[in-house]
Length: 400
Image (cartoon, rainbow, N blue to C red; front, side):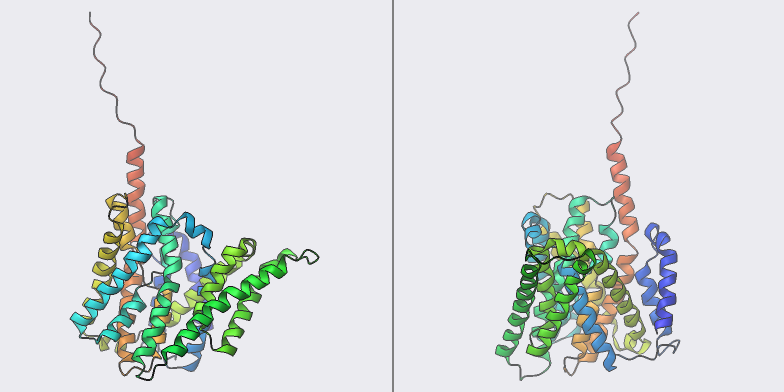
């Protein structure tokens, strides 16, 4: 597996420039290679969704990504850039959740709790795939800002709903009091530990070198992880809260860690997509009926676009920018890992629900990773057209 992933990573490096200019996608490359080498096709990667190491690896991966994503934006950043992302997060995301839940119940006949769980897993957008459009200067800045903040925060906002619904569908013996303590405890640990470390770093007679300053968030992450393991507090909410707290109270630590954190997060996400591709077996795809594929398509073509369009009405954005923000809500890393939470939920239909999530994510990765370049080119053409001054009226002939 390591050899295959390394070779795929080299191939991704070699085509990354081409992928930036065309509809090729490095994310689709990892997904396709994993699928081709999986146990039911190439047979080279003998892995299965119920292998114990997968759950552990995905748990660590989700912790790393939420911790890193949380550092993308602090409380002060949110105060200055809340208007458009706030509409997308506080209006668009709940509307997407509601529409997807209705589609699951109407098309697939899912019970309400299971339909809500699938909708919650598919509600977050992915910052990796969103970065394909966010990183393009041709896209208007306000759209890039909207997508960047939204994709960085909605993983954490969806997480409590996913955890609660996972517990609900796993059986009738859910202790909501204990679950609430675990969620609140995770947030508390994620806030207290970074603040304590930041205060220690400000003690005057202590000095740090740049190398060890960059390692301070690693120390915070290890302490948070260990504390949650010992206390039973929610690991994922703690990771996300810790990242936001670092960005809010110690931006200098965030800056020192930023480049290293981005590299680690990117490798973790690509590896997760690679493993995810290997788990998309033909039998899993066959387990999803035609209506399941229609449901997956409608979550992309109807649920988010309609929800975000409604949320952005009256925002002052031109229709092209609203449509771009509405369309570009890719499902990716967070949905993959939340899908594994569904798989381990204990629900009698856990495997089938996981397969529904698999189909929706696979379609999203292909569709969204293939449309960022055409969208960017459209805005580039529009910008060039706007930059051309109006032609002056023809000069009148001088009278004789």
